[in-house]
Length: 156
Image 1 (tube, rainbow, N blue to C red):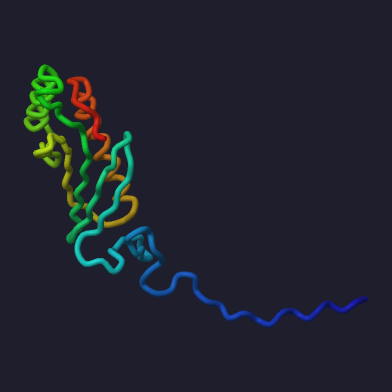
Image 2 (cartoon, helix red, strand yellow; image 1 turned 180 degrees about the horizontal axis):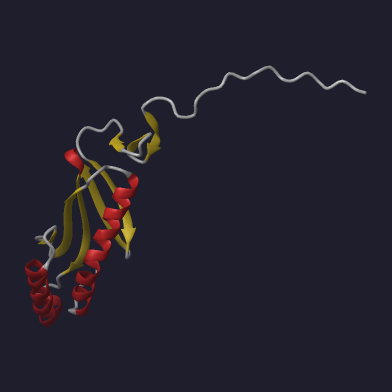
């Protein structure tokens, strides 16, 4: 009978989850409870994602206040298409009147329509951020469709 080789020396065990921070996720540090906190940033944390070929901008400020905004469309200039301009401006006014409480429609001096949504999160976790972003894109979809139907120019 042959002897078994000697077993390797014991390795010191190091707990996988030690310290207050589990790791980094973009501009955030992730805690063991899943909570996100800004990593070394003073002020709000900004991030973005693409949806319907538009750049959705997100800003997470103190006290879990989240602001999401998306360029919805551009109102045509009178010299471009006067008839469409009137119907698009009417649609923008309808958006302002019939919108959800958290949602606002902003018309810039360059004739860009931006939709903005402000909400306070219950907790700052990745799943809460994803859920809020999903609610936002679902909420703005009918408005984007209305603007497109009325002849608004898609954002560049």
